[in-house]
Image: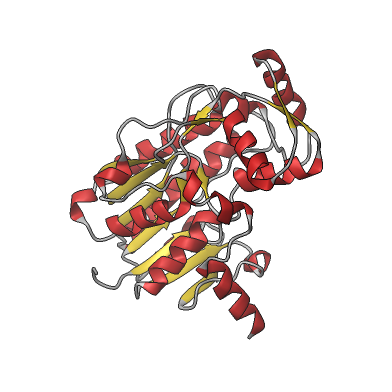
Length: 314
């Protein structure tokens, strides 16, 4: 085990963040999670030993103050959709925030930066992937001791993949599916967290980019059918041709919450399949979907949920 660190996490209340914070706190690190509105995360209780601090991460002065005394910063912030479709929301959430994080690290003397990006960052025509690529470029030119992670779609209990499709399949006997042939290599959230923890103190990982993906390739159609089978649901999944897939994105641009969007459609034109296995490079066995699917779709009873229930009863 490496030395105990003072770690500040942005995006620590999210799907990956809560698990990473738990792992880091369990390892004896002092972890502070930044949030603009801590009250909004009252149902996402943090691991014992982690602190939640109210900070607007887009306020440069507040961010620098929050980094004082820290030696490590982890930026997990990311969005999958934005208001409108002009790229400004993605640029603010990914590029401008990365610039602010880098400046605050320099100002506060925090040298170590772990940065979450995405597989295919900088490729294709989507605002999402373009902004991910721009943010990576800022990190790589920062002069900090950085490590970048590029995960494929991440799965686990409460994910936005199998769990999301399970909810849709329970609601309707017929599911029109855009971009059914888009390919993915889902990576288990536990493997992503393990990769981040392993690189924390390892100097050989400074200045490296790690593609994180699982051992299996699935189409989106495969993923939906697999979900239905696991749930024991008889559903008709209607694969939409390219023209109707694109039209669905345009229509859903105007649906509250944007369950799908034009930019999602553009992102799906680039298969989320990696080239150089970052998990293997770090000595991590990648977890197949089949080993975790029952847990994911059954709601699971992992340590994270048990801790949350324990704290809720106190």
